[in-house]
Image (cartoon, rainbow, N blue to C red; front, side):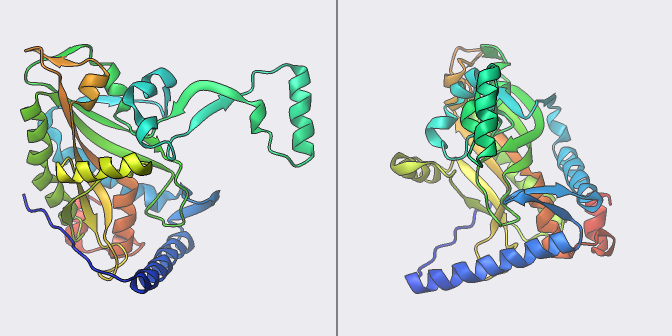
Length: 323
């Protein structure tokens, strides 16, 4: 596979100018998507309603992704947008991404507490402190629930899963490519170190070919997750140095700005195998890997590249998407 790196040398002034230009490009795309009736502003940064034209393309993208991976014969699983706190804890997500996590709370008080809540609300004060944790978390990664369901042993050839669902990450932004609520379609493999790496590496050319067939300019680049804090900086460096994560990026905002990730291929090594006590048939800790299609990001990248009327897109793009 071909991996591209993008070394850059910039001054503080250059960065400020580039950031301003990028913000303007993001605002322009956002305004066009809203004005042309592709997205609906719901009043919170990174939270949108979607119209029929968006759903038409989104559905086509998802179906094309499934077709590209159908030879895996993966087990199909679908999960709700929330997960039990106990299962969330086992993923160790809160240690690495506390700023992205979000819990669910509910009211469990009596009449007196309710009156106090209403009084605070009447005074214009925040009333959420009257709610109590519900032992549920909004799911930040759609593959999380699968690791607690496979049991303590997977066969030596491993198992493949087709998983799609809602994700939530508390990351408000006016960049239309960075949503708080979004969907990922993931193809997960749990098996040996060799089979997990093969799943990640062997499918990268397939994913790239698919995205390029949509008329998108694609690079595959080493990447890292947005780990939190000082320790997170070390984790991010290690992730890049060990080539655990690759992103499929496209220049949504033009050649003068950093390209945007729209999908990824990730090697977890033994992280989930250790956390969930999963072993292979020979007794070794299982390794895992996943391919993740960012469905909204791919869809919006298509609107950015080809315009907001899918019927006017190039014939080869519509053919690839079966539109």
